Image (cartoon, rainbow, N blue to C red; front, side, top):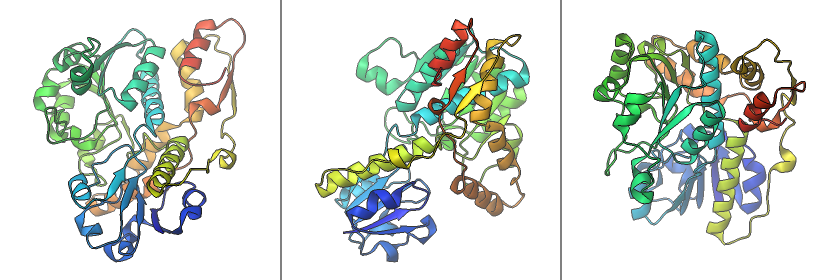
Amino acid sequence: MKIICSTNIPYAEEAFRPLGDLTILAPKEITADRVRDADVLVIRSTLHANRALLEGSRVRFVGTATIGTDHLDLAYLNQAGITWCAAPGCNANSVSEYVTTALLCLGQRHGFTLSGKTIGIVGVGNVGRLVVQKAQALGLRVLQNDPPRHDAENNPVFLPLEQVLAEADILTLHMPLTKTGPYPTWHLADRRFFEQLKPGVVWLNAARGAAMDSDAFLTARATGKVACAVLDTWEGEPVFRTDVLAKADIATPHIAGHSFEGKVTGTVMMYRSVCRFLGIAPTWTPERLLPPPIVPEIKLDPTGLSEEAALWRIVRPVYDIEADDRRLRAGAAADPKTRGEHFEKLRKNYPIRREFRFTRVVLPQGHPRLEAKIRNLGFVI
């Protein structure tokens, strides 16, 4: 059994080496020639698994250690009889912590309070569900829009998009990218979409870059429909537009889901899927390999601070989102090829980011409401 695995999949050696003859290659090195005699291919979103790569090969299983599948040619894989799988939900908590951090950062930077504001969440799947929980922990009123779930569940919690757009102070996207079907999401955020917003919205896109029409976004910024923007995904990435970057308060290189735990969970899900495909019992787990927390404990006296200022002092040492922003802007070169290479390098060499649950927060007694918020965001008290 020959297994080819892309780089940037943590613990690939430990997980897949016992299953067969393992070769770990950079995505650019995974060519049709290299996969011709492989049986199993495990990748991330930087590689397209399609006819050009796989036709004539021995590959019978393709797995992506990511939640998205738009880099898989599913029609070809199904027609060729190649088993495929993704890792839905593997980095959902990471994305929800990214949104939490971005909102607290903007609130402190621009002097507004999150509690009591209304957030519209478009797409309430694995990621959106956790964003709902974090938003409620921050004291936000939550409006949910998910047409496929509304059709399947007939749950009145899922509201029409028009209502969400009209009422939201904050709007965040968390749906897959689709061009067909009853609810296509490609350029969902188009000119008409932004025109329906009330003025001064805080806008976040950590879903897929092409879910947002970049020109429509720039118009919305110019007219004041969008007052603040957080962009993690970019139309045309890895190349990103510098005019769009200039209008983003926080700009990051598609790393919202790149927590260390999110990546490791993706590896575990792929390992178990390969084991299922091979008909063997999974035995490997990564727990004993995990590094110690980077920020094991934070002691804070919140006296004199607002609750959100206190939360920002807790969150910021654990995830410095502004450092991610600075790194992306540092490579905003005029040449598109250079920008794209910079974007890919940042993703490939992303520093280890641990999730909130690996940090213990110590407060003096007498702050029960703040303690509850900290705990509900995922920290240990």
